[in-house]
Image (cartoon, rainbow, N blue to C red; front, side):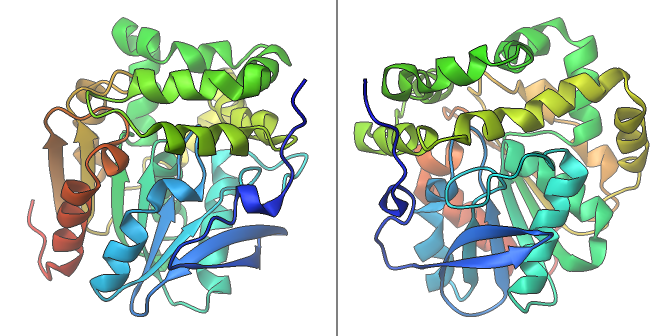
Length: 308
């Protein structure tokens, strides 16, 4: 049996960036940062951690931004707390990190679960979010309706339904050196598959004790709350429109989040909203074609008047 990884070297990977921890919302969060200028805060999705933004960190820094990629609660080098994995609290983690970095606001860039939380943070703490960019994830209300009303979307997100079982999903994620993580990343990608070395990094990170459980907990809340008062309250809260310029990025071949599920999220944005579909890319456009993704993101960030 392979011994689980616990070393900080699994998470604090070398590069032009610097690593440190910041305190926010009652927990400690690991960040990797590079560059000076307006803050751009990068939020990873499942089954990854901050390193998914390794291509965007130097690109954003070269473009004149302070680029920071954080590990979400329970993942990578951040604290693994026993509770606090509902989207409202996770969004407060994000806005708390903005404050801890000494910045008045940030442009949030979120992928997958990080995108779900970026949408949430922009609604809950609008004064702290300067701009919003989301990849591979619809607005939370759009996500909810697609999961409940679209049979094809429900089938595409079968892993989320599977996460509702106790204990077994965690064991499956870490079995055989977290082979399931590699399968998910390859199955969800388009033709431009990620490098084997990158997949191995994600597998090692998932094997850090408690990471699998903490990674699954947000999805358990998202499903189990569908019929609970806290879920209804969150859904009502998300009726409030996003009032900052928003860039919505999506891969045309994304097998996890269907294009028709993500498209239409602009109805929840009362500000300039730009939809960008990447032809031939899957669920990880920022890794499958990092140059195209970074160029699109940076051009939009620098546009003083992003149009609809």
